[in-house]
Length: 107
Image 1 (tube, rainbow, N blue to C red):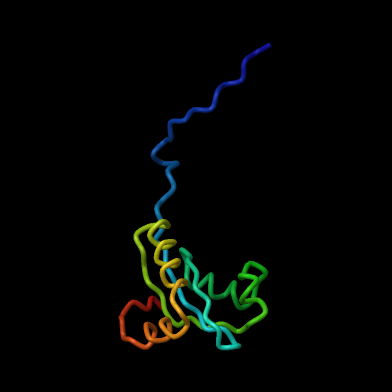
Image 2 (cartoon, rainbow, N blue to C red):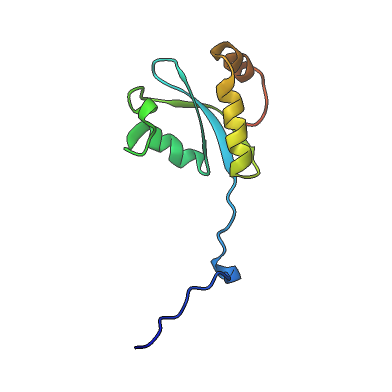
């Protein structure tokens, strides 16, 4: 019986996944609640929140949602840390933050 070739742990440089930018975003739902998340594609994610089954369970029941803020991060880890930081704030603190001009809106 012939042996199957083993999978190699070495990656061809052409097969390496391109690094994508990550964004932290804040959306306002129809019921005026705020939703914080991360994504690599803001336009796609906003569309998913408003129209598809891929949107978060929280926003499906609170459509339509509107993008209020986005912030570009260097990587997923940084985006998750920033998302956690913003989520930990009170609603009042989030609204104060959103009221300040930051120039970080991506769309």
